[in-house]
Image 1: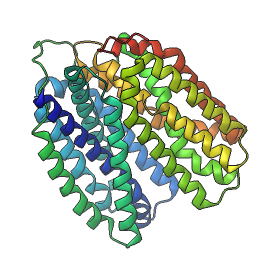
Image 2: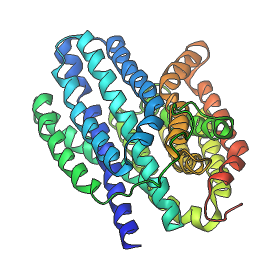
Image 3: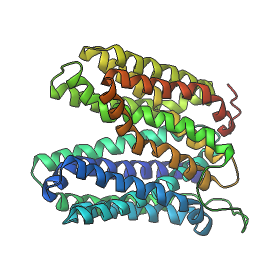
Image 4: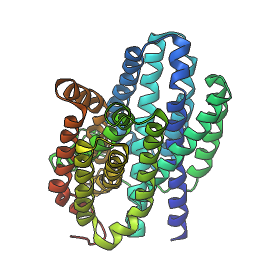
Length: 383
């Protein structure tokens, strides 16, 4: 059991490292755009390449998991992800930036699936919920990476230097933590197809995760714009609201495991879905900063634990956890391709407040589909 507890600490560190890379990169996007002289459209296209790279690479997660021991593959993929952080800052043209973003996205997606697979396996051994807390560590890592990035940007530090310092440090942390990870049980040589498209058994779990991710990204991408354009809030209030949204999700995830162990995954997701729907509807009618911020906070509070629980359900839904988790991740993270454009197009045709009715609808589906997560629980919860 001590070995399993050590592995839990190690995988928590892995989640924090992954989040730190994400937070570090996000804060230096303006530097990268300024260096290349690209406009928002060009930068958005580069980010699209990252999403395509991630979603494409995750299709091979099952093959990697089948061929290589998890205790080896997870830290190795995390090292690749950390080193890929450097590439976008080195790009000297939009074309090279696009290529760098494909690598960045691919390594990030593969590392994401590997660490989630480790988390599900450790959760099974401990016989209690830990996935929400692990994703909370990812959120904390993102906040820490962002904080360091903000300081670096404020000091005028070249992003190549910034990433050149941060990446090796994160590599050393990942390698050190990787020694305590667990190996997966041996699998059959012909365990089935190794590509990560979700099976019928996992598809509804993936849809629940997609809807939760849609709500999360709607808050992260549009909260600041909503506050400035709809409620007339100052820019600093809008920025603080986005930071608060992320902090709310981190706190909810860190507390989520105790709630799941107490009430079960199904009841937790249904209640979380109600909170998220309430938050989205509050945003729809909000015309002042305080109710709008409250609405976004409720969205974050509601969706925070749903994706981690979907990964747990997927990992326990069959004999190939890496393939099943990758299948859910492929669909859920596909929200990153759809959300910004969907909200923007609906807002153009109607208004930004009306567009959040779609967010409310997506969050409502998590309530309907919550029962599918019952299968992912290994602790006897059927609530």
